[in-house]
Image (cartoon, rainbow, N blue to C red; front, top):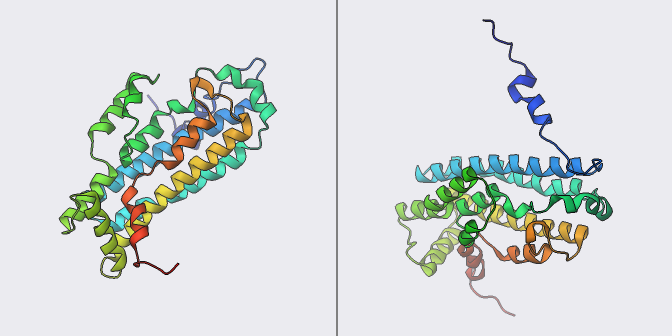
Length: 260
């Protein structure tokens, strides 16, 4: 039997991809297609981000800091893309969104299992109990439970530091280790660059969270979100979540004290 010739469309499964957008409003509201596409694209970029984070963990485990940096160059580019997607979404007015918003219940962005995977992979696991109440598929739940069992990106970094002779046994020791790297950056330049990649990654997640909060508030004000969440009020609480807290704290002690 002759096999079909591989084409651009068949390789990328374009017909299947373009058949994945199904507005629920009846008749379909013009802007609902945009809402669906934006969030589907978010999920695709989350998938690639997880792919790169997993690679970064492997590279740290192999003490290959140059390849860690390469993975994060791609992650940073993805993050910039995620931020600019908000610009596209904000071409939709509150009236446009409210025209189909009620039909989204009880679905909510809070249910994005892949974004929780990113949080778990990076070490932010304060929301573990929410799994008990999250309406996700068995496969998504299995992925999240696996993420809870595996070492985090922060664990991988600490493992590298320990193998390199640095003290990571406590919170204070880790801050002092980071201080040593920053204040002797020329002696630890590859590691210094990786630490800067991590802080940039964390900062860009926070910037994206903040942009998302403002976008939600612009669209629905302080109304409750779909799925029973508190909407913008809940999202505001996420702006203090940091993957690498000691990397932020070390900035306070760098360079000694200055006159006020």
